Length: 480
Image (tube, rainbow, N blue to C red):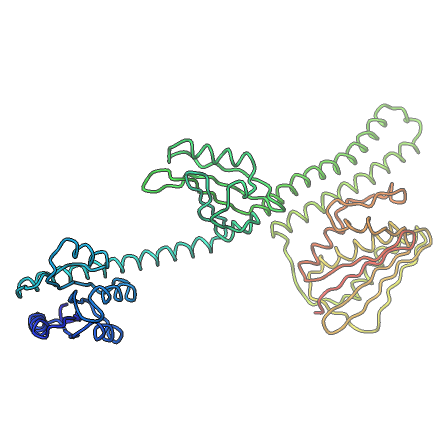
């Protein structure tokens, strides 16, 4: 190791300089000599030295100034030993204050020189080890900060005084707050319940306390907030707050609750009506009025069919969500499918005097899809176009295409809808409620199902409508 160390000897006495050089080179140090402070500084600018042996009293730039230059420029990486005949306590204190490591008093012998240099070498080793440790520590801290900053959870650390001392970008985003050393706990805008959790953790004094967990609405987000003791060497030293965005889970729970409520309501009405008709019949009140019984049975049948449609739609939606709907994707000719569907609904249209027609050029309109999905889409739209139409009206299907897409427009002359009524049209269980729609059966799931199927095929649906002027549903699917 000695052979790698470079030593600068600065002394205005040539004999002293040469003597120190001979002793140090015998110990395998590489030695440079300077006769005064100016030469020393020039050498320090040109080379790096592990050790510097500097005479205190020199004409011009003295040893104090050279030592000060080393410490201010090289950051104490060069270990300085002052060589001087001024063996006073005051001198020793001054050179130490200037940053020197040791003091060698003239006259000295080779053994004294070797002893002070060996101590300086050990000091240099300690400096290198300290620098290595600090570099590793800085690297670990940098890695820790990178890990914390890359986490999808928000992280906030509070010290024992409830002051934020660390906050990663995700926490800043969740709380819409930018971290600074002046940030206070109150500026995080956490609820009183969360603040009580924090106080409980700080006041417990036990690192074994269980994590406090709660959900809290912050702006448009629902956050899961976990409050834990922040431990250092096994002792509670503050609070660690972990924030996780659970908005999606919360919305699912809200939707589930609303869905169950809607299903219960939609099932209750037809079942109650059917039971009411059955109970009336069972009383025998109309035993001699067969036509009245037939009328009530017909109404029960209509209610039962609506209930069965609702159950089918619910089963389809549930299977679709669970990924259990089997699909057979094939290239299908859409014009032929629409013709078959219009034939199926012709009898219903005739009963209301509604004229149905298909407008399309003598071309093929290919799409790649599951046949049952196409039936569900267009049969829903045709059925609605008939149910919400007027006596003697028209229902027209038109087909167009380009290189990318096939477009079907389902245009009726029915009751139409206002802009507010259109707004929730594709939501589950949504039904337009006005005097014109009362008494028209439906589950409120048909258009929601259509929208969901189209999403699976990267298709779209748009509605244009005005009250009393009819509606046009435009469905676009990728060309197959």
